[in-house]
Length: 207
Image (cartoon, rainbow, N blue to C red; front, side, top):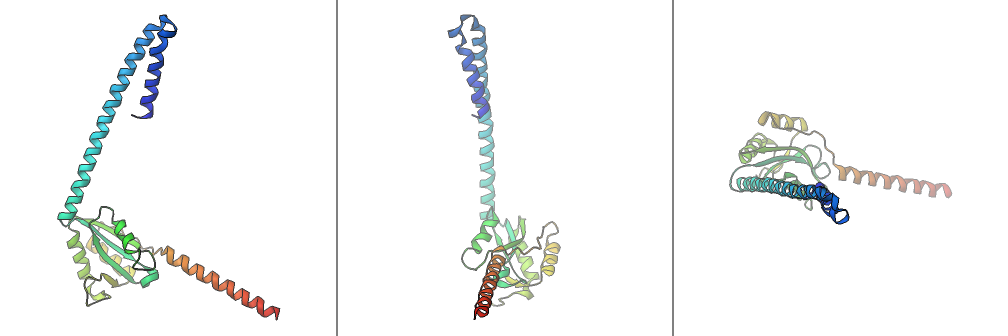
């Protein structure tokens, strides 16, 4: 039950106890009892509605998981890693996970020094086919031309954005390479170099 249910039940209890203090308040007690019964019924109905909503949501998620596991549905992602590969290298892959960002985070955990930036998530009922079409268009830009499982492509930001829009006009595309960890690391290195340079300069001036 929610907080409002408990408050109303508390009021009903107080009203029900009134006759023990003053017998003339019996009608008020009857009204309080009726309110209590009504609140309990109301609370149980709300619980039943919420229970049905949760069951429906669980069923929907289970269906989505089954569809992704047994079919072609999923999300095609386009990500970059400025600090690891430079400004013109993008990974184009596909995941069946309900939260595609989980896959991106997994890729950036240990195999590369910095986290990935996401440029596009494209959900499709045929993500396998969508990924294949993008890979076909990007074939000439493959970094590793011997292993097709290495899904990295050396292509400009403008070109890959154009290919995404032409392949899926409804897809959104983020042009920003945040590269937060990489830029923060570079700033730390630059600050360290400045401090060291100043220390050297001070040491020379003392001589």
